[in-house]
Each structure stands twice: as structure tokens, then as C-alpha cells.
Length: 208
Image 1 (cartoon, one colour):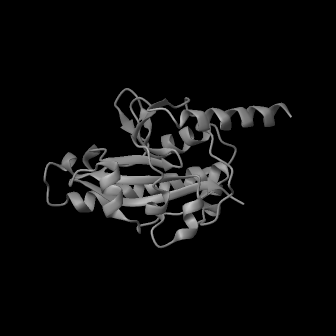
Image 2: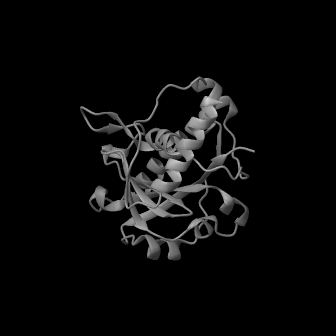
């Protein structure tokens, strides 16, 4: 009963926090019961989700796994990155708006007050019911105009995507990597520059 009450409190705190412009995330708990090899074996693409919201401690764990700071002394992140440019930016999009994840400070900053989940779902309207989406954007400016920047960005998004898959699997969440989305609407609403390329998106939710 005590554990259930704590979980409900975290959910309510998360719902309240998502109305703020800056959201400090809890320090991610890096201890999980599931082994890496079990997570690899159980990894699946999931397109149907429970309506239960994702609490901030859980979201913090997924974001850290995606591309959080793993080596504070060097600033390196959990995902491989071409030339260590760390070009992938993760936007968290839910009912209360869209937020940019800042790995260095482990916080979210609000960039849009609209619910963009339908735009992220695109033609696959069923996934729009996910509590949140993680949008992976490659900042091509970090490659300094190198001709291989587009390739590097796609590669780096793939690394982050796999981290999201494994984190979700180990935490009992479902997700699927998707390329389709309404890029014109998202670019406008998120205020993305021409050098910011939308690579993939991940709807994330508790499995049914």
C-alpha cells in the first residue's frame, strides 16, 4: 500500500511539473533488476499503451539511458556519437507541451505549450495515445558543414534509439522507433532551425 501511494504521488508531481517552464529531473536510479541480455531478448516494438502517465523518476531514467551524462569528468554520454559531437537532441512531447532535455543539467525546458503527439504520430494515429513521445533531432551544425553530417546524424540517432528501446524494456515500458511524422508542423511549433534534422521519434508508454 505504501509503495502504491508513493507511485501515485510521483505521478501527481509529474503532472504538476509538466506545466512548468523548467523541470529539474530526479537523479536517475541506475539500478534495474533486468539484465542487459534479458532486455535484448525481450525487446519488442510496441504500438499500444496503457493510459497511465509516466512519472518523472521513470522519465529521468529513460532520458539518461537515451543520451545522459555517463562520465561527468569528461562530459561523455551513454550513447555513441560520431566524433563525440553529441548532436542528438531529445524533445519530450506530451499533453502539456514539448520540452528539450538537457543532459548536462538533467532538466527539461519548455519550448512549446501545444500537444504535438498527433503531429508526431502522423498517419499512424493509434500511437498518438502514448503518454509521451521522444523526438530525436540531429543538430547538423555540430558537424561544421562536413559532407557526412547527414550520415553521422542518422547513425547517432540509431544509437540513442536502441538505448531508449532497452531502457523501456527493462522498466516495463513499451516503445517503437518511428520515422514518419508531420515534419513541417513540428519544425514550426518547436522553432527548429534548418540545421536541426528530425531523425526518429519514440512513443513511450506503459505496456497493457
